[in-house]
Image 1: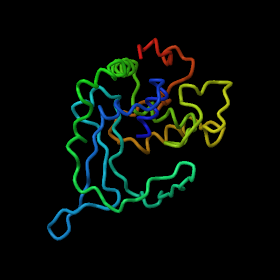
Image 2: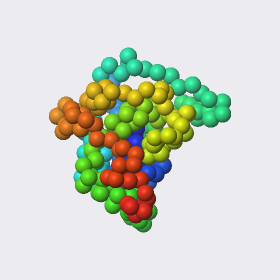
Image 3: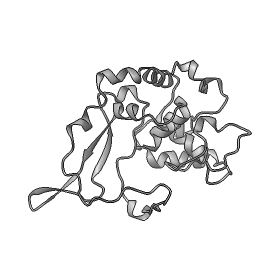
Image 4: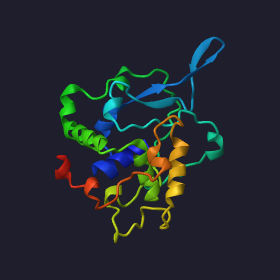
Amino acid sequence: MVAFVALCEGFLGIDPHFDLWRHFFTVSLSKRRIGGKEVSMPMGCASIHLCHTRASSYPLMRLSSSNKGWHSQWFYVRDDVNAPLPKYSGCPIEEALESWKWGILTKEKKHITNLLVALHTLKERGVKGSGIIGAYHARRVPPLMAHALPLHRMVPGVSFEGTVLVDEALPPSEVAQRIKEVMEPTNDTSGSTLEPMYPVPGHPQCDRNPGSLNL
């Protein structure tokens, strides 16, 4: 999800697009077997997958499938009174809806046609998952936190106040290490073993002009 947000903000120059997300991803429920029966898990029950039939249209991004050691990185989210979290219903979702697998309807696909063309252009220019992940690490943008500027507007001379946790830039070696931590070892990590290929504001090949990609 973080990489998708970075793809939208840093490479397509748009806010995260829910219909585009629905086109590429599906959600499934995970269950565990107790006494010979499958039961729903009250927490950590859902997983997000890239639809295999549409994977060829999405930037190459083989993320690590192991969540080993997640307990050591557990964190809490404060319930902000200005934007409160939904109240827990106490009713777990026990069956996945068929609509979760559909993506968007054919008649709605016309709304993302230009975005799909733009993604094809980005893939031809060599944009991969390692570069997208490197983008938000290089800009020091906290994943999924509210920030004042989208990635494509983080250009020299602009105030990053309210956008990044710290002003100091990470060295390329540290960005590369963070990319490796979330990518499958078998993946083509050429972008992380050398210099991460992330968007550079003002670079001709990373033009954010919507007209250039016909968005």
